[in-house]
Image 1: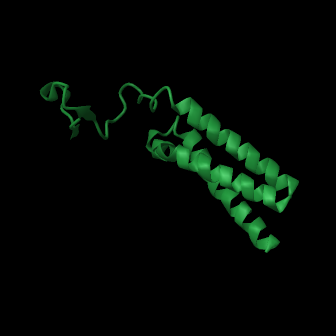
Image 2 (image 1 turned 90 degrees about the vertical axis):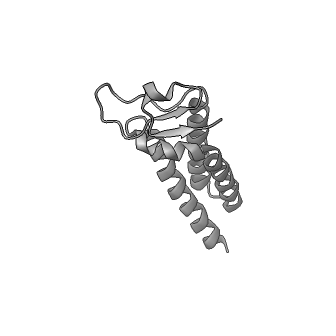
Length: 115
């Protein structure tokens, strides 16, 4: 049972690390910002991985899980006040979204969101 729990923690650490790395890279590749929409769930999952790591009593796994949880919470807290970074001037536009209260003719929106 202990080996299965250790393998489960290792799998959680791998998945969480990959997802957190994608969240960090979203600053340079805006398409990856989709990962950041699930940061509350990722942080909750990392907390569960930390609890499982504590159950294994393996100090290395506990430290790695705590580090991953800290990174996920840092990503979550830094993402709260703002939004995704703006695209560089002159870059190709792939989607423009506007709300109904904007002037739709001037915006030339690809999608319209009704509030």
